Length: 176
Ligand code: ADP
Image 1: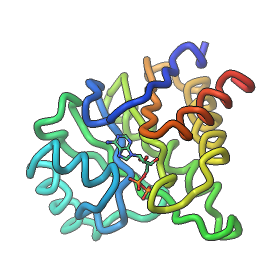
Image 2 (image 1 turned 45 degrees about the vertical axis):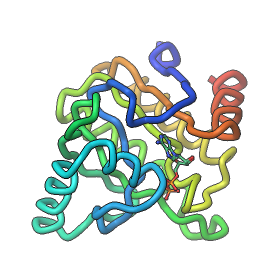
Image 3 (image 1 turned 90 degrees about the horizontal axis):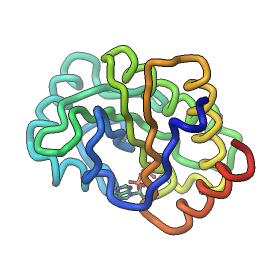
């Protein structure tokens, strides 16, 4: 049952011990504010070194795509960096691009045989994606993936603020 593999928690994703935590990165992959800054600060320079190597190889990361690095000093084993869309009113393909972030991150986890993965509320900070809509996209994309792939054992949604926690729990309780 896909829904049994989903856990919603309130807290700081840098403290989560999972095979992978997901970073809401920007396309430069070279660090930023919000959760991105917190992950690089807590994980140390090894994460940025891996990011630089990826940039040298492929020149950054497009919106909706994902790449994987070490987690440095974090309790997690890997960081999956995905680039969420900036909210621009909703007619710039934002919904599809946000769903792509979740799906591509899960696909990368599967490809690397990672069983547990933790997500922040991608795009809902500096990128201003509406939180209620983002919660529904996150949940539906994760549930669809889990229904189609049995390798992922647990997906943790790590909500940092009360509003995201409320919308995420509400959507889960009403629709999943
Ligand atoms: P984006 O640019 O994708 O909007 P942000 O980092 O600004 O990325 O925000 C994404 C979400 O991450 C926001 O909901 C914010 O509350 C949350 N966030 C910030 N710091 C942390 C953290 N340490 N752990 C988990 N989530 C966090």
